[in-house]
Length: 359
Image (cartoon, rainbow, N blue to C red; front, side, top):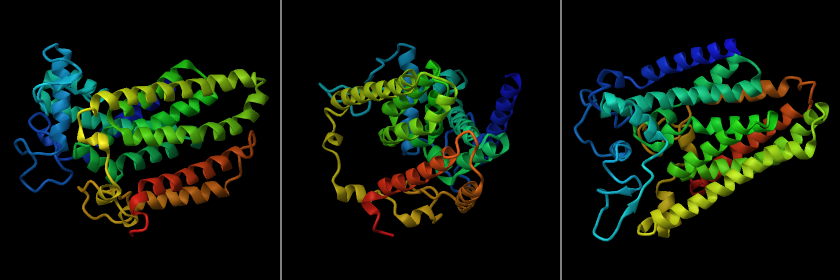
């Protein structure tokens, strides 16, 4: 146990150092400004009140700090879009804003930038923990975390102030909690899964949609692959299924009800309540070519994964397919590979749906 903790601490330190390098020159103005794009013009690393998502995010972090100090009401936005008779409901970008509040004693810029570095470090660590379950080895798992953390998309979204970049580490953490629920069935992993879902419900509906969809597909697949191991261990199958399925469905139900509540109180006075038509969606949708084209690394449409990442992922899939299956369950690894390959295909189609025929 102690050796494992030391490994994790070592991995955290590596990803922390790497985060400082990937976000450079952030470290040079850490306590006097916040990033507004991945590649600022030379000499313009810090700009006064530069408009963008970064400033919007900083605003909500700042409100969370004031709310916790009881200087402002917590769930009401007293400034933005504030008109007589209308109160805008907000959740202050929780849980991200908690990191900001903790470090705010060192100043607003320092707290925001600390949130950037910690988020990037955490994304690498979370993928390392998940990959270690599948690869059964620390070094390949570390490489997986490295690929995930250094992808151009992750860094660009973070430095552009987009919340999905900050929450990127919660995606592998959610899958990690699902795997642990099936393998160990402990309450702490059920709570961890709920935390991941709830975090997305508070900030990022897109990631909540994908995680919920993934969970519903994951349940029957992982149940089938777990049955043989449960039988070998003489577990009560009904009890074991309840331990895995009940927390997942309960979490999905609670989060669904919460989102319905948010839609009624948060969007009740917003034009966003009507949604967008397909032409508007297409306007902001990337195309297939964006997966392979570096293009403008600062654009919101940037979904370039990096050719090195794509090549390593492709080779890993080929080599793992040629490797003999594990003796304890000769079909489990093959099912895993097919499931995640299919999941990649489905999620790509969903993400590019409105522009799938526009290369």
